[in-house]
Image 1 (tube, rainbow, N blue to C red):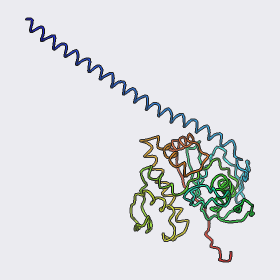
Image 2 (cartoon, one colour):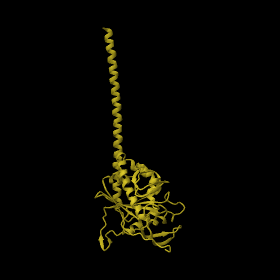
Image 3 (cartoon, rainbow, N blue to C red):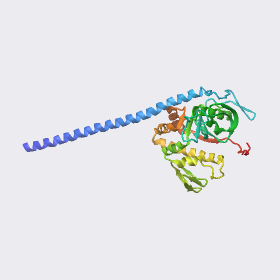
Image 4 (cartoon, helix red, strand yellow):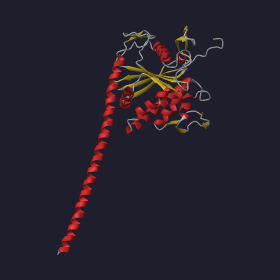
Length: 333
């Protein structure tokens, strides 16, 4: 009888110990789960907070259209082909420039060291109608551009390629001012509310951060010493992405118009890929922003970048170009 009682006592002790262990494990599991929930909520809260700050900052930008000295802006109307148009002040316009230099800025020259803007885009954000229109401007478009020599002495204004406007500045602030003035002049004084300048080699970095972009080649192309035939489906990675966007000589009809069409298709596919990537990781925008800061120059803040990237998820995105005719100058000009 005594042995039986002792045996039961031992079993009861084991059961109590097992229950206690399960209870401790349950507490630990619940604690970890709570931590994960708090962290997830914190990340979501940070993103929401950044979105709100970014949204308010964009509203402030629209209140100050005359931000640059070389700016000509008629706040009432724009006249074109005999018609009068009133500017929609609810729009926010961002200028994106892709520069052919490996890095931005020229420490040795305050002027005449900026490089050329190979890619010129004006992103028109219409928040009210959930629409983003990307206007691509041909780098060879001829507009009045203010020129300076290496010492900053004005050389006057001449009609030249809009891509050259950036080259007359310092590769940063002055170059941006000259480029904005040229773009605004081309578009009848439309205001530019913000800018983002990127050295073209950084395109490879951004491309890879979204997982690469898959394209179908419309023409035979040579990329990074590799030759591809038209019709090849290719996932662009690394330097191939930059070369794909910049290639012109030996590709199709070799015109910049064809290159623009190729760049627009890449941008459409890039945005689609970035959207898919961001669905699984909203922190991607901040990572890209911080990674390419050394290769970029912008007045767009991190909060505005987060707001813009998350806002356009549901937007209609449309790409447009300015119609024109390619005219070749003589060797005497």
